[in-house]
Length: 325
Image 1 (cartoon, rainbow, N blue to C red):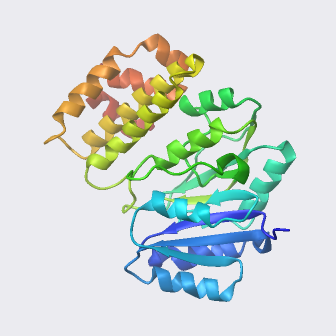
Image 2: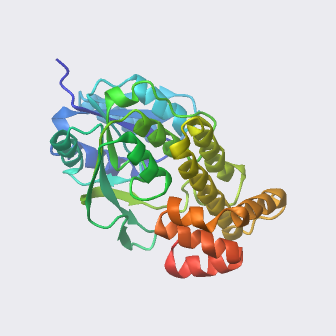
């Protein structure tokens, strides 16, 4: 009989500055003895691998797997190949987990006999401010179609991996798409929901500290990586196109991803080489029906759509004040 209930996959690349604290937060879990922690070093050039090996040598339920630098998707896929737990979780190597995180997510899964359980997380900003991601509520989706609708409309489920616990059987055949720097988690969550029959959210559970850093994938100069989310959203639409009830939700999801890319373009003053994308996305957004936006987008995303239709610059001005995009 397998001793481990949860396998936690931790992709690592040059995070030695934060790694001790992050791994310690996993060691301090209330059900640590039932956890299998898989540290995937993605070709780090700092001391990350040495730190991983230090913990692997100390604890029998922590193992280190090494690969040449090939990106976070490849690292997570390698982690999935090495899991033995009944449930799978993902953890970022520069974040922190409160000691009750995985016990809480596991209890939630078992209480509702859910394929996926979701808690909340607290965003820690570079200035030290903290903000909870969701309001407190409990929500159960007993039908995968309804869960996918909620996910695509940006309602409650969210793109993040770190606030979720997955039954291994529902993600057994799912791989992260290779060659993408952003949005691979979004695509994985969609695939997991597609395989699930019951999903539960309890956002009163908020034991993950998601630490926003200036060096994250979503910061820095604008580059082609920002189109990854649009390309993956198009892949979701293509995957869903044969099931007509979900098509308008996938179309709305794609429009929202285009809005976000335009936002990043303006935030980073990107213009040279990207004008054709800016013009195309702006045209697509202006053509998109307001009636559809009301029906298929979350309230916050709908407000973002209206502002972007009026003026991208007006959108940016209001976004800075109200964070509605």
